Length: 447
Image 1 (cartoon, rainbow, N blue to C red):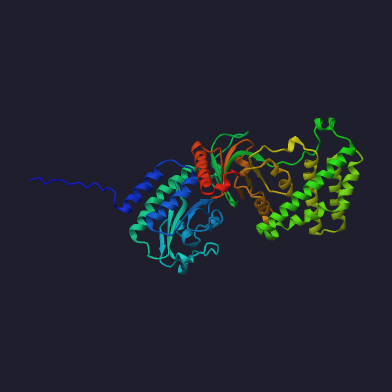
Image 2 (image 1 turned 90 degrees about the horizontal axis):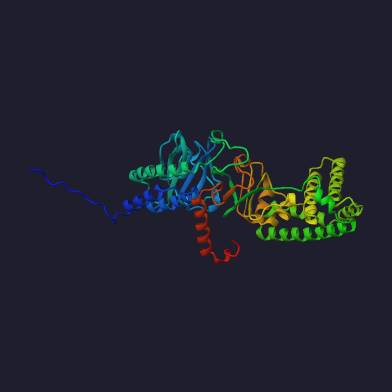
């Protein structure tokens, strides 16, 4: 007699199974990398009853960068970095095997990050993410109590494969993978995602525009319409007065933001703009009829020569460079050169920021700033904080991939610049901004 074969429908009611099915359903659909980095850690925390979940992405050949996280300060994103083999996470990627610990701080490979305060969550599990031909990153979960069981290790390892597929789909461009892609001269429409380090958090959409400076030679149209020497002197005085007020206002803002030594250079600009001899010399030359640009250029050259003749004092050399930068800004404020103007609401890209950008580039109301690997030091960071728009630095391959006019999403929460984003990425950004405005109504006027 043949027995009856029974089957069982595993309906809702099993929290672990329900959570797994929801995660599979979530990860099965294509999505922007930012959505994956935001949502996957939240879902894994609920599924594994953890307090912390982090996603590390391999950038270059050896560096693991935390790009997604729930549980730690958001400022850790893009800044917490490990080499393969470093820390428990780096070791898991090196061995390409999960590693767990009931007391992470006591583990021989433990790497301490003071900014994370992760000693609160000593129960640690790191699982490697597999790429097509090697490691792609890692996913880490942490708890305050209760060691991770073998079934939980197996579950996270399996779900890590779905996360890896999503990261691969994003086509993150870095120094390791740049060589396999080429971009045609004049730009293109291929979507690429460039990693960087976040400075000012936030997300925005805009057209890319490279930072500009006044042209060295006046345009023919400007030469034909050049005002009289008397008008030049008057316009120059107005430019000095406006610049002094703007810099003073930014210096006050820097004090309120407690930026500290990074913004101390603003005091130097306040001194320069208040220097009667500097103003008089610029007006004296402008009064000869050579034009504002030529007058300020000559003053800057005189200061530079004087600094070089006196001594190789680094302070005087830096002051001379500051005056050159300020003279460029005053030239634009007194007699705007259309060739140096920027489009409104753009994502600005460049090798660094100066006070010129605080006075001039900021007038175009940029929505974000991405700076290349050449940008560095406390001054750039202070200027970005004063501009107060989503900003990242150390953007890998910036000028190789970005061109004027390209549409870009700057994601300074995770530290990413997405060039030529997909429709789904633009839609995801708009949903994010809408949700953000609903949670913080005071931001609606600014967005």
